[in-house]
Length: 309
Picture 1 (cartoon, rainbow, N blue to C red):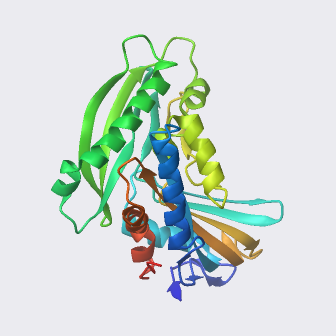
Picture 2 (picture 1 turned 30 degrees about the vertical axis):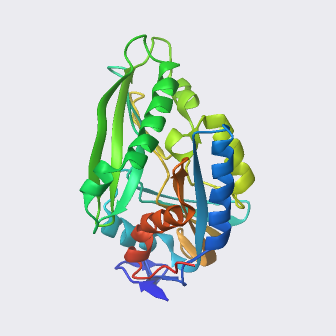
Picture 3 (picture 1 turned 60 degrees about the vertical axis):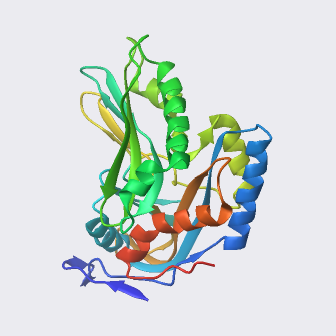
């Protein structure tokens, strides 16, 4: 059991205190690898080029979600992280995002939009040059770059869509190396920020290519709805500019509210989905291992070890 204690008060009790039970996959390794094998059948049949397949890690949770956010954010130092807590239909929800991925950044004054899709992950202790040299990971990213170029092209001025950074290998916190590209465009006159989001959502990196067919296959193969995972947290500025993340590396808490604490839970389930991009060269066991690498930001932040079965 993991406990966190922070200073302050929440109705006279320690603000930020929480407990998290052991983390496990709600979908077994065998189940996930079988789904990857089925995704590969779809790819070989020509239904899709890439399918992002996820499974959900779960744990019991009790206490203050703000304390969990403080603990995990401090360890991960996410570039596009965030914390949201709200009540709906008698349940409390908290979203703790440690996202390293930019979905869309829109500057209303220049009408320039950027997206930074990610594909390719290695643990921080591994050699980043191995990721840089990986043809499979390079191909995964190239597919999604092409998809995002097409999405932006639907709302951009002709000739303005360009890849400004083809592939960078960056460290994110003390957890992983990621391969990232940068695509920019200038929106056409009359196109709104809402139009931009509608044209590009959901992010190609968390669906696959072609996007609609990949999403259909995901819905068939994944046993749980994704909830906030792979959605977006959008920060809108007064002039209409905005920055939108991709909700990966994101915990979703759902359960019974603690009426004495605005961000507290009496009992809840912590959900932390993790996924991998499946392409023709994918090995089911390797894709399972990649998902656990991505979950390291949660496990390490809570000083837990993940089971590999």
